[in-house]
Length: 200
Image (tube, rainbow, N blue to C red; front, side, top):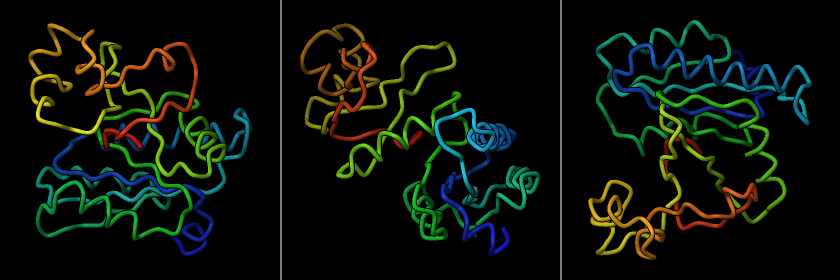
């Protein structure tokens, strides 16, 4: 990325890659398409500048080579070893000066309007630091990306817990995986304890 583009970046997408194959290309296409929609004025505000930082955790499948298709908007930060997701995200975030950061997994795709909606939520709530969208599985079912703080029952009633599948209506199951009626009713701004790092 040229210094001019980096300085103008209003949004930086940070993706940690480890042997994601062509998924990384599809993720970057999704981001580029969303930002092009914002730039074209079809959304409420212009998308302004954006950049993508792909932190590659020593992939051996050549997947980071896909990133160059999106230059000069995208660049790769290569690690000699797999430093993990959290450290990789921190590397990407510290490599940008953009005021808005989109953290996304390589296998995620943005729906039209996702960036504008998340950004509007942040701007409407100055005390809010992180916003997460509904995350859907390929079959359209909700992944349950909003959660309550973990406790000793999370293993049983968490997103993949055996008892949650049998009794999702129990308060303990609903606390561990927040599927709030307000969200399904179209209301925004539901406060939760934590969000999945799949898309923030």
